[in-house]
Image: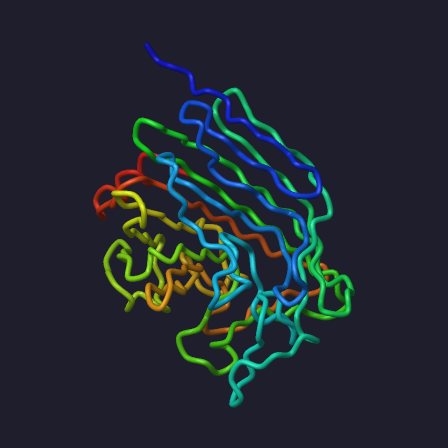
Length: 313
């Protein structure tokens, strides 16, 4: 006999957050926080805490080394001279400088849908606006966060994230990173995950490589696994970008270059502007789609490949 999945529970605290709960375990899988926060931190919506089905937190929030790192969030570290990442701005030859006049924001504009479905999936569909420090409208974003493949028995669930960003300026938007501006091995921008402090020195895997040397390379997926503080066991997060993420058609089937660190902290970003700027013309839309598998346990490469093959997009 096949057991139908139980609908997820969604609670919307208006002006603050949407919390998604798996009813069988009672675990809050994540909170999607959309309230604005400190201007210096480039306020933007984010997911934190994200938890495994075992109840273990796998994100960090405002760590003392980078207060603007908040769980899982969409970022833009260098955008036409502005910083929608947060904190200090990288300037070639001078390093990171406190330049508050460069720090912008991504603002919640409204939800089009917040729904838990009978098949055990859920969706949060949101409209956002992107702004430089002076508050002008630079872009509009249509964002869709979905939860699927929730499997308490296997201890895993999947988040998909789709962002469609439309340039509302009269001139191109130029997406870059510290690396496009002269700093080596710092190509971070786009979707960004910050792991908890215990995840330092975690294991980094792709289909054919392992370890920090994966930094700046291309691969269809990347997995990060580490051991918890305060509880026995490990967790694994698998990051994958969709085939249609085409970097404006310039780089082929798997264009993203991975930004990943396990020292001095755990972080992953499938950067779409690692080595080269991405130029978005006025009125044009840039769409990227990602999924993140959140699992209890330390998954091996074969286990990850099998899961991804059995759970297609």
